[in-house]
Image (cartoon, one colour):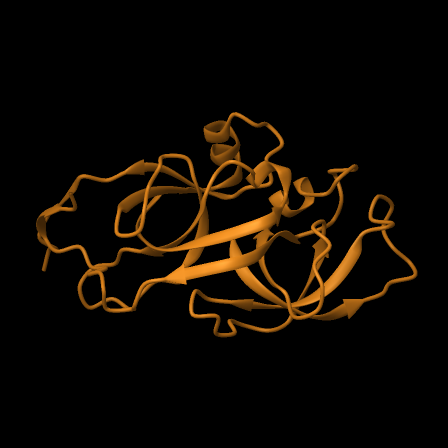
Amino acid sequence: MILGKVVGTVVTTISHRDYKNRRLLVVQPLVLPGDSPGEDFIALDNTQAGIGDTVLVNREGNGARQALKNPDACVISVIVGIVDSVYLEEAPR
Amino acid sequence: MLFGRVRGTAVCTLKYPGTEGLKLLIVQPLNKKLEPVGALQVAADVVQAGIGDLCVMVRSREAALAMPDVKFVPIDLALVGIVDELAVVAEDKFDLTMQPGWNHFT
């Protein structure tokens, strides 16, 4: 799973049936200071997240299918949590 | 999952069993700013997209699961949605770094 920030919304009227009734959001991964920004991706929302929320994203198909309770879902990235806070230890020198 | 723009069609006369009847499209993977990422790829279409359409694509095993009938097919990129509206916030609106110590997001 990765931590990311929701930076966009996607509207699709024509979509695969596994994607119906849930929102597609654009997620940008969080990085450490000084690191280059990660590659953005699209994730299916399972938590009612919105733009600006920091989210926990499952980026693996089996976990996604379990989260969506659909054993054949053609989904990889699913937002499975909204993050309140993160504690990071100072990096060892 | 990622964005892609349909750039053309591919026609194969000889296909692997189970992939007959699938429409193959040439797509350009894009990032959130709709800038090209990497080379053109071939994707199987299940939403009847056309040339020029902005689409949502899914990679790897899940692409094969998007197929309508036979789900054990050698497909690794599929179009699963046609984008009607896309709203992305400005690049510098949010801080995307995690600092040492506590980071409170709410």
